[in-house]
Image 1 (cartoon, rainbow, N blue to C red):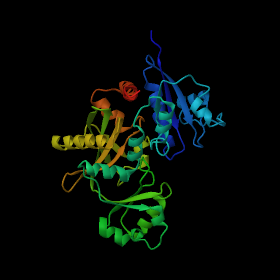
Image 2: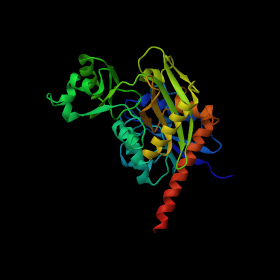
Image 3: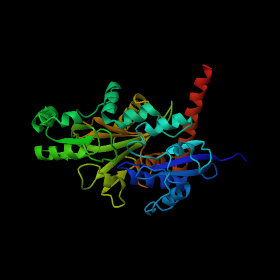
Image 4: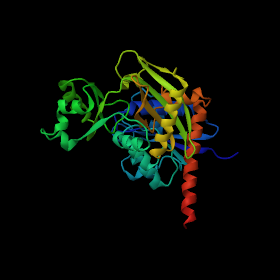
Length: 361
């Protein structure tokens, strides 16, 4: 019998999406194929410390339990050496938000010369930045909502016209969304329709990022699809989000057990629209050079049924109510098999890069 593959499951992190990461990692830990894989959890606390193996397992066994005074790694070099764990074969990062899916952690894996699930450094960085995603999507011919970017130095200039609601409304309309450019899970996002709300929304968004996007509101319904693979990815069906109370898909509606939003899988949409959503998703996945996995979010605009890209989530949630695993389950890839495929794709990409390097030795 061959040895099992040792998987380093990285969770937590110092970001606003910490709780989502813990729940996603818990699900992966519970559902991974233990006949093929041995899992070594690596809990990065909200303070940014790497906990030891024992405390990492405590958190995964009971995600809502508070672990008091976790054993903190005193020396940063131990994060690389991982002294209390065996040699890891492949990393599975499920650290959402800043430092987890923006290329930083991916760069560490490259330095370690280890395979890892999900995007490489470039794709992680550009998909984390909503403006960069929009620019690349436009280049690929995929419609996006009109936007204005506000940098912090502009926000600090009281005479900058981007701070003037009337000016922004003249460019984008009076119904707007304000959001940090580098955040996920609807953190720091506000829907505004007047000057007072706009000023409050800018202040809120700048709590999370140094660049904020102001977008026209696209009225319609939210539709999402999922992509899996490397050079020849497969695209799942389309899911639709029905919001009962809120005007948009808030953080709470994404992750709370008492969410007022309903995920409709598959979406009850005309075949032509479903195919447009899937076709656009593949274009964006390839334009941003994603690999492994991504969830592509769009709005189906009510006035003309145009599919307008919202964002690319290159490290989507894996909680029990997350869209990504549910979409693949609907097309015949259950949760456990999905985890296995993601690890296989990580190894495949690593082996391919090694082959390219050896060609030039």
